[in-house]
Amino acid sequence: MRFTVEAGSTTPPYEQLRMQVVDAVRDGRLAAGAKLPTVRALAEELGLAVNTVARAYRELEADGVVEGRGRNGTFVRATGDPVEQALQAAASAYADAVARLSVPTDAAVQAVERALGAR
Image 1 (cartoon, helix red, strand yellow):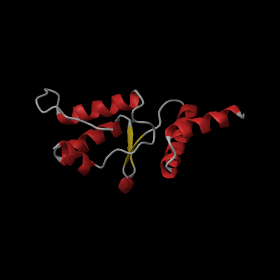
Image 2: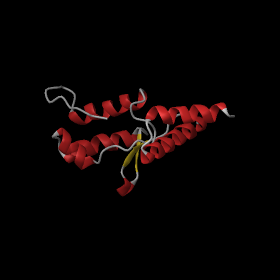
Image 3: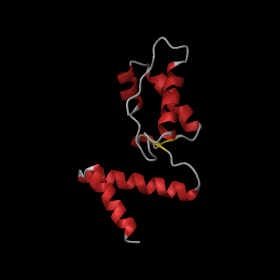
Image 4: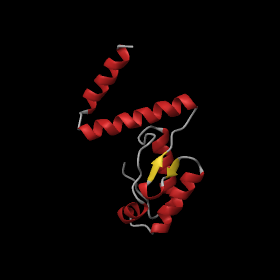
């Protein structure tokens, strides 16, 4: 996921970043369990001060959109009822396994469809 900040905007950079993350979570471009770039890496990429990105992350965490896991990084939180949260967590774990195995997306989806069909 690529983030951008419009320098001439009347919206502060931290708020632009915060809104982009919220929108990406809402529309599914950032799934539960997705890891966000480190504060330093994103600040460097966007040409922003580290404190600007850190403020966006703090506000996202306060809003319950992301969770900081110390030195492990910042991750998108699962949302919704407990069943939805469990589903999101399972999907995220499966996506991680697919990536580790270098399985193409279409093959991974077919495997899920076969597994669901066998139930």
